[in-house]
Length: 430
Image (cartoon, rainbow, N blue to C red; front, side, top):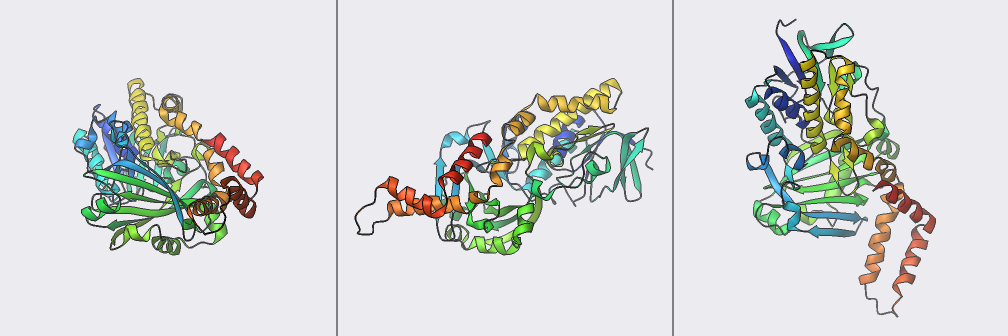
């Protein structure tokens, strides 16, 4: 066992872990940030969009020095059938106004930068280390075990991702339920900067974020995404794991097929895949939240299930940053009391309740139920695309009144009752 003892050991150098390390180190605490990858960010290729307000509160105007890609000023949502697409597009420079703007980031670069800020503040970073277990003393966590090494600390922050081994070891959660998580497959596809700007109608540092609902996931709950980087695009699909198992869909085959969809192929043409990754994504919100504290330990970021998917917006990094900062705040409060018991560390949950993290999760707590509705990925996209196709198609026949045409499509594809059911769920969710 190491003779050195830290005030805090943080496991996982993603946005939650590195933010916690930064906040603790700049307050003078002895901090060890442990990352299983060869360097921070090397295991964190999922995600790609950061809403800036959260990190701006901690490192003002961080985007002036951080390795961000493009500032999102164009939002698009596409409903796909096998051969068609209907896209809602918002192009507004107001979306780029600080600090409520967002940037596309490449996690390998961004996470390394944020961990570097923690190191500059005084945190010690140890990479290439897999944490196997927790150390206990007097009924409290008192450190970590990595291989043959045992390292002591007053408190451990588990920021080790959605499939958090440490949260399980501490008895704070059980096995993940398939319906609570999704499988994400992402490719980074290199394209010339000028090509990206021309294809997406961008200027300078402007960026676009596009989400896809429908044919890409073969009818299974989930969706596609495409974010523009400076000289590449981040592209992929996300499937609900429970639905994926039932449908027997191959993720790899679905991604390859998706690249050749008529609405996608022109955007990726000529590109070269330079990165590929697959990852679990927490998507059940409050329904999958574990217990967040025990004596000597806190849970933050994806390990706590802090991700929001509304269908038109996916957020995780901003919630991770805030939860990491609040975990650090709780550790500092416990340090001042000299007490790292569960009774003291429960203040972390109080901080979360007072923050946007819990209010946002509460506001969208019914969205997972909406996104489980099968018609959202089959009937609804087909209905929207076919109605608009008929609206714009001239056949040389006597014109059909729009109301009559819409009713005909509804009767052919679904029922008013089913549409009303989806509408009611949507009203309750967002």
